Length: 234
Image 1: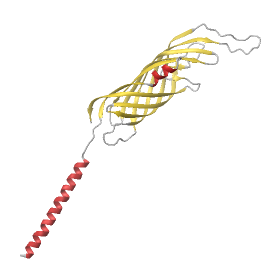
Image 2 (image 1 turned 45 degrees about the vertical axis):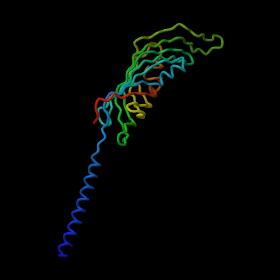
Image 3 (image 1 turned 90 degrees about the horizontal axis):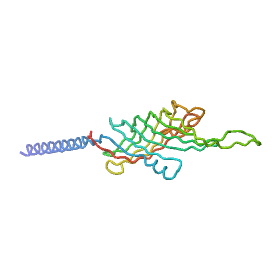
């Protein structure tokens, strides 16, 4: 009788231990199957650096609308469009460029978010295009003569329907501060592909591109606030 009791006891211990192991496995497996879905939708905002710059610099005014649409876990279609007017004062010239622009491309998020976070460290590319007018407000002939000094000529000359095309490489960060509300900052390196120049004068500033250097390159900075309108989560 004692023999059967001992056998039954060990059988009970084995079954109970196996049952506990199964429960633990099921529990751990259940924990691993928790999936946090990310929101997909249109994100729309503005570049708040341009109104600030307009208020402190009397030679500049502009605004920019930004937007993106998420197409996969890491890829976003992105665009910016806006209007700028900038007066450039050089050693011998004073000119004003004004017009609109569009940039279109994509962002790739290299940041691996934790759980349900929705932040970004982004690398991106844009194709940029602008249409603008440029007015030569005044200029001074560069004549080095002690006896015949040059005088400033204030007759304005306007060249219309100018355009510029460029490529733009972007690096930035985007942080969700409140639910669906994002702050972001980015810098960009721009390479001019083509620009229609006015006669007898060089384009010094293109809306959307900024200052055009002799190397046909430029730099940009954006500081934006945007809101996500989610359509779905997956």
